[in-house]
Length: 600
Image (tube, rainbow, N blue to C red; front, top):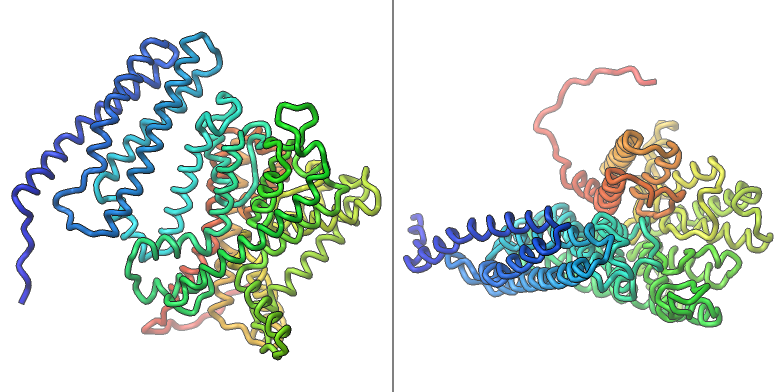
């Protein structure tokens, strides 16, 4: 017998209708006044009037967005999520209103070059106000609930929302040395680059951002470095959603956890490893950097290397950036001045390699080492760990030799033999995962750039902070090719590879190659740079490596947007494709007749 439908209380229904009727008026007021504020920013007193009028709408807007929908059933978890979202949004609205007022005051006093900045703040404020109305009440909780059962969607929402929030924070005056230096597009690009741990930059971090802005970049890199493995699972768990068995298995596979029951423990281990390695790395870097006088100079001092004016902060920033494979630097000249400083370079190299190994591999290696210390004989390492370590070692050694041989007469020309070996080892560690560089990439030979594109496209290990198609995917493809030539089942070392794994590897590589080709084609339509430079930039963005020949800041608006989208896809896409392929395999209820097709 079907239960009778639940009828809302007449008072609740009336309150809901009253809220709905006031929403269009408030929305129209925000759009009209905000449009006037943006369009007439050059007329100071008109903009002041519009600014005051828009400020008067904030109070009723806040009441409308925070108010719970009377028709929505009470739920403690949803209430907490709703309040957290709206509190953050209101804080951003207040911050941008204050920033807009400060800039407008300077404009009225005769300051020049700030109209574009004022329009940026005005546009961002209108977007935030409309976002609050669109997600008023419990809609944000319902959005998270709708995404919780689909990890791919939740990953996209998490990274996209984090990038947008980061862009807004990076555009505030408190984050910038000069508010007229950075547009909202540049702020968005830098936020995407940080949260996708890529490192491509349209501005110089040391010269553009204050200590507050650099802290925000560091936090974005930290979230991005943990994001692929932890962010989706953590948000889902904190949202208190009950996942279906299918979603539970997918999320457990993302962090190499056996079940949802052990998921929290796995996340704790990942976070512990991350902060432990970053703390040790920061300590070692501080020991190396404190003896360099230029690092401790303030930003305004002649010859200052770091924008923060602190060796400790420079050590922390670079440790997080290296382990998360973010490759942003708060040194004015990047790491080029450290080409002959082996201590700094090799400390960063170790952090970069560890960040690219993947937490499952690190955990297994450390567990085996602990068992040996206790006198126990560890069981055989898993195939995934053995393949990851062997492939990483081969690519590191091959890249180092290639750099040393090819670049000794080019970008390494001015270095001594010892420094060339140091630079080759450092660039080999960076090329697949992190975009740090101690030499000018634009001076490298075309052959070296092409080899670097291959290394970047392969990337590092799964479940790591790095991008690319991943080393294990490359190893599986090589095994499949060898098996096809020999007419036998694909195998790696002493294990056969399941057909489903080969199918996933082929799918990931095909889609990744297609994305790179499409982006290069589109960039060639809107940019005038050399095709090899565009190809290098695209592969670097897709693989979230961050190396560049120096064209990033000179890209057009369309080019910057394309690269930003490519970074987001490179951070989310390959894993999403792999999970979709693993979840989409079904046995057909019928078989079609076979027929041969000519190949080759």
